Amino acid sequence: MERILMIGIAIVLDCLFGDPYWLYHPVQLIGKVISILKRQMQKICKRDHGIQKKKEIIAGGCLTAMVVTGTFAATAAMLHAAFCLHPAVGRILEVFWMYQILAAKCLKVESDKVFQNLKEHDIDKARRSISYLVGRDTEQLSEEEIAKACVETVAENTTDGVIAPLFYLFCGGVPLAMAYKAVNTLDSMVGYRNEELEYLGKISAKLDDIANYIPARIAAWTMIAAAFLLKMNGRMAWKTYLADRHAHLSPNCAQTEAAAAGALEIQLGGTHDYFGKPVYKPTIGRDICMCDGTKIKGAQKLMYASLVICFCIFSLFLIGLQQI
Image (cartoon, rainbow, N blue to C red; front, side):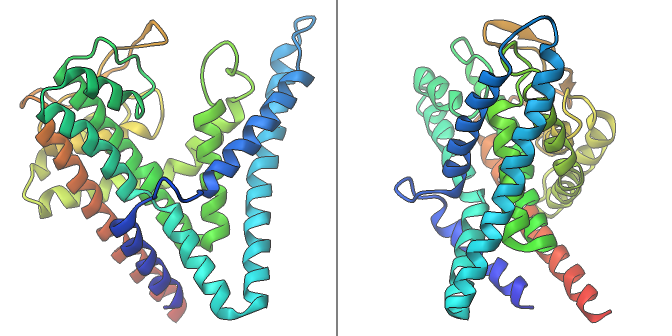
């Protein structure tokens, strides 16, 4: 019950305060460590005699292992030291880190910037705001394409920033959840299919797929349930999920995107430019309604409802385990 209470407090803190920009976040430190180690690995793997692929994959595996295990060990050690000082100090630090690990409010704040720009019909600002949230080229996006990109971001990050961290907090507490954030950060920094990082980031990208496999499906199922509870198109969410849940290069991204597209009666996905080159992606959902700023708000509602449903389910499951 203590862990459930602490996670509940962390969720409330996140929903109220999010991530203040002046507050140093553990992910920033993880990112700095990744940058330093990446440079070292790239120096070791200087291109030579056609054996680069194998060397970079091995180096990427070492990078992933060091960052993930190091994050888990450092978090566990600092928590242990805090509890040794005083149990209250340990609990305060644990709740504080739980609060930092969750990112629902941060996702809402950043997507609200796009919503406000679209509401004011400031296309240039909207393109600039969405550029911080997506990897695609944004200079030529229309208002509808910007709104779609924002909905996709909220839907996808409902897994990465909300449900997966919550899942790992329940499974293994702060150390495991922080290790998950390290996996997620590795994927965002080195898990690219480009000339520089295709092989160095291969293991990081694969581990991110594995770590998100179960949470992505839980997020999609609870998002469908949320669609019914919020009186959105729950039946369409379910049908779209069944039809399009694999319509993505990633095994996980289309899970929540399909549920959101159906619930909001819009079409997501499709081909977009990345670094000046078109990248083909299947479409997700049916183009029933035009995607505008109101759909961004709808995606936010699905995210928060999914968070509440997951917290209730995980809590009941943990209570059941404790009583066995």
